[in-house]
Length: 556
Image (cartoon, rainbow, N blue to C red; front, side):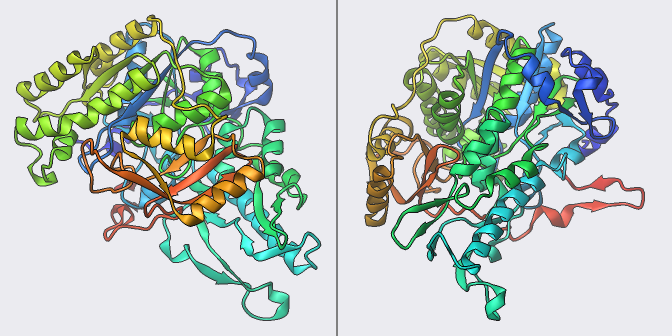
């Protein structure tokens, strides 16, 4: 069996100029990065704003497991399947982070015959967007510390600096550091730390910005710390927004690539869903909606994180309304939620599947009942799945009025997703009344409670004393009406990664609240969530190599 990278390397790609032509984008509107990658010019984006929107399709999933779910693979395969059915589809996805690529998760270009190419470029440096975000983030950090060093006219309290440096790598050694050591000219000594780039507020800002003017305004609002009088200090106060925008000017432009079947794909931005909002850029999504009859996008991790943030944050801010939602699951992953160890997942086990199914059903009912959107379950099929297992899932879904479509896009590309695509087309023509999980004019505590009760199905939220003080202060500063970005484990509905399936009788503890004023939301940190992940015992990087001809192996 060929690996993902072997399949990708054997692919015959079309020149990106030809892929762009399918969308009516001329070569003069492209900024080429070689033969197979391009950014789209600002002028072209401006020129299509009055066009009507196509249908927006969100792909999400059950809570992830070691067995894998295949959300990106399904998204790519679905886009290819639309092409097989003669429909004009555009895919809009996130860029992968180097942290997971070299860590535990691997690449994020899809898999098998449902991949975005060039796969190696996409998973590594791509067009340099993440490097630009890292540079802008660290420029702000440098200007902040320099201001303190050069007389501190704003009266910034070094103990209340909240802006961290970042690097796009899983590096736990950098979580907590002390810098400014040495001589007086070497800076002011203070405690500091690093975030991973995809958790940076600048990543969230870039993905939510409508245009370069909005980007600059959002950057200027970023809070970097507080004065001795407890007043916030912003990037605008440091006169940093202009230079940061200059670094991000090209990164703001969406990237165009293609699938193995030459379906156009805009890959742009990549915030983590368990830390940031987990969605690709608003600019890329809106552009795709103007250029295709159907836009397929995804939100990171399970629907309790990615879909919730997509619907309550991105759709609210960008005034988007999905026409249909796909919830991806596998028989293997559901059996894992039912208590089966990874080594035993290949054997038929209807009892374990029955125990794991509530995880899927809760996600489905959240989409249909909480958000009021039509939904289909996509079963990413494996050869060892039995007919009895598949029928059990289908029967359970039918009980709540939702259809199931088998997806075999990994093995068959677009052909393996036609059943799913037909159901999505049907759903897109149905009427729906989309509504949010909460309204923003409620208190911070009420919004948190709504997410926990409605989406997680817990008993409610518990704020630590520190979080209560933070909520009060953020409200006093005028941020109480911001939406909530929950930073929570991806493995469970709860804040305990070990509680699989659909746990009940739990509360979620919020230990820290901080405002991302530029992004326009409040981040609620729960459990042991960290903004800088670490590498596993055996990092994926150990298996990656390159030969004398520059051919990469081990990247998946």
